[in-house]
Length: 284
Image (cartoon, rainbow, N blue to C red; front, side, top):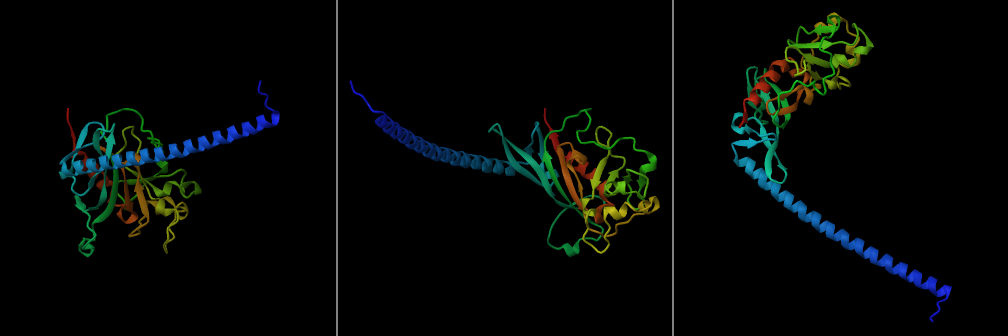
């Protein structure tokens, strides 16, 4: 009977452990290379599918969007309609509509960077970035609606120089509690589906880099009369209509503008919503 000493057993055990570790390392390296090749192959297939989807959408007059509807690109020539998305590796859908555009006061005009000197002074520049999907009618409360529908009258400031816009204060002016509210403008007569108001957030008033130093902190010190007669003139601090405040029949989006375009914004936004909605086709 073969008898192995304790010393020899430990020696053989160490060899087995080393061999096992070597095999494991080899396995990990092989697995890594296999996974990398599989990932590269999958990425190549995905990119090919995406390119084919993009080419397909580019050739179509009416492109499909999530939910079963279509957007007629010829009815919204001012915007890019695309951003291909493959759903279940089969359905080729357009998920985005975006672009800069001019508001002429009566309609929308395609943005062109060339020849800006010929643009009328009354035109205003905006930027739209919208996601496309078929919206369904619902009576559910808006998931982001935080403004109370019946705001106290004594805290509502109607802006004489900005028809269709109001400021809903947090406290009677002047008051430091109004620093947040004086840079948020409420659009009147165009509520969201649950009745809460749509908003234009001018966060550029937090730290405006200009000689006027017209920050939200300074505005919070204005009296009610001063706020009612507020006029930003040609200031270009940025403002945003966020996703929860702009929608249309084919989705929702954000709209970027400057303070110099704020006066025309309420009329433009309502027009833009109807304009985009007319391009959405629902087929049964």
